[in-house]
Length: 162
Image 1 (cartoon, rainbow, N blue to C red):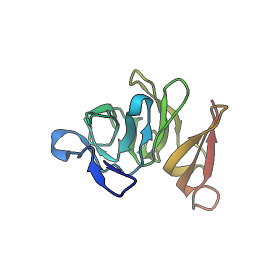
Image 2: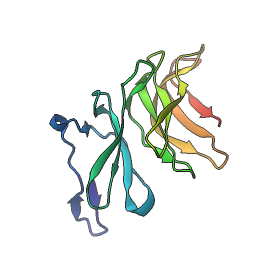
Image 3: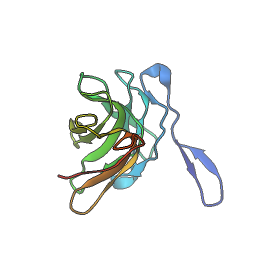
Image 4: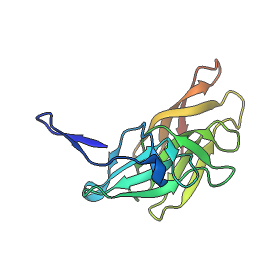
C-alpha cells in the first residue's frame, strides 16, 4: 500500500508478505475508517489462503480482521473494495465460494463476525462472480455488478435490500 502526495512523492505504507500468513494481492481500493485507518481486502492469503479483510493504522500496523474460506459456505477471493454503514459494519463481495461456488456478498461486524448476505447462483438467471466495489445508499441498500450470469450470461447489476 502506498500514499502519493500532491507533489508526486510516493511513500510505502505497508508491504504484504505472502510467507507470513498475511493477505496478499490487494486488487481492490481501500476506504478510510475513523481516525485515518484504512480498510481493504486481499484476494489471497490469510489463515485459509483464500483472502482477507484488513485494516491498516495510520502508523502502518496491519491487522487481519477476517480470513475467508474457513467454512464450506464462506465466500473466497474478495475482489472489490469494501464500504461502511453508519453502524461500522463493512460490506463487500467475493468472486468465488459460497454455497454455489459463484461468490457472495458479506457483512463484517465491528466485532469481526462475518455474515453472508447473499450467495450467487441460487436462482435461474442469477449473476455470478461479483466484481468491483459495492455502493451503499442512505436506505441501506447495496448495489453491485457481476462479471457473469444474468439473462444473457454477461453479468448483472444487483441490489440487496436490508
